[in-house]
Length: 493
Image (cartoon, rainbow, N blue to C red; front, side, top):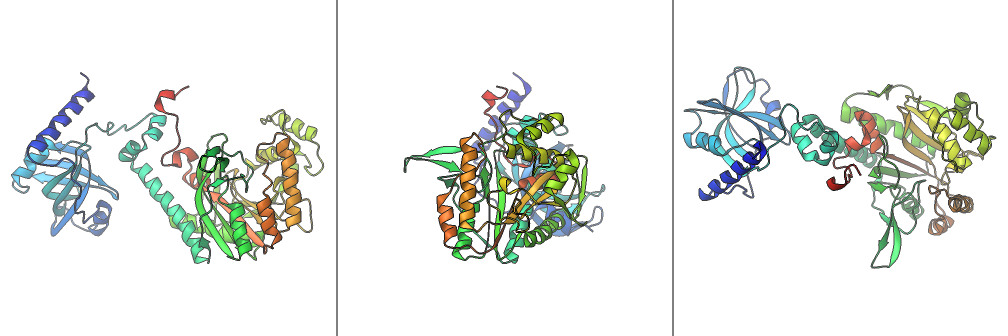
């Protein structure tokens, strides 16, 4: 029998012993009055060894326990951090001391009551007077100093990684704050939060490959949405709501890498009577607020890139930047010239790539060296079928993308509200889809009909948790609390 099997067997025995003593190893409630992090803040000035008369009650997981005879030290980890507990002969009731020695294991959830004090070494601690078993663990935790070293296992058993690694836990606290800052910022600006369908009869609002499924009750195929209700929210602009936003999950049946996942959380807002220039100012303010309130700083680093949100945001023209970096004039270049340049640049290029996707690949090559923060403008109308044309340059659209660390972390534009122009562009997209372009958009006749009733000038914008991953300087998969993974039996296939 291996050591782990012995530990499991011993813990099963303790569970049975507790039951014989009429002690429930898994009670349904405990009165928690205090949290470790709040106690650390409250008693920050408590002098060494100085006791207070303050009684505290905490609950959490035992992550360390050392029995030294007449004294024992442990560490309780809760949702706010951790705090040391001390059991001392003549100070802690004998029955409590004995209970801990005989029944408490690392990994157990316990409730602890006692008096707050600071040890000779300066560590804030609780002198224990009562202990309650709240959940008896059976499996042992990973070894303290090494934790989980296998990267795939960390993601598969994220709950263990968060027990052993406080930095991972805090990252997800920041992620919650990240979305709350965005939500509160928009609410303060007068936007209202809405919910739009996740299942759609046609996948619209973005250039992406959708997931397809079947709706049994209605006996029809449907798609999981690829945008956060772009076409639905614009129908709400037709309805006269004025300012809306949604934060929700979107799904794209595409590749996975450091910046892309198949499902992730995104936000989109729509703002009546505003254009893309108004949107740029609002987005700049929002990103600065996220940086300040979530991280308390404006300067960040991702890989070799450094960017500072407090500096001037450069405005980059799409066609000019590509010509400067590659020598290609995308307004005149043929498909063959674009493919030849992509091959010359050693960029991956499908043999059947069309001219539009080729131009997009050229831009992505140029984008990698831009640290930002910057706004990309002047995109070609062929690339963005839902954006309003630039009056001075009809071949371009009034679009802006946020560029940091060589990638796009936000996209917005003056929304196209000319129903006839929109219908023509959908028809062109249909031709691309019929020719094999899986990312081309569907012809949404219901949306065109809504536009024919009239939609005011609108600025729309979307950003996702890719921005959060960039601010954390981590691959996006690591910033998802429970990323999609193959079942263990299929791992490596």
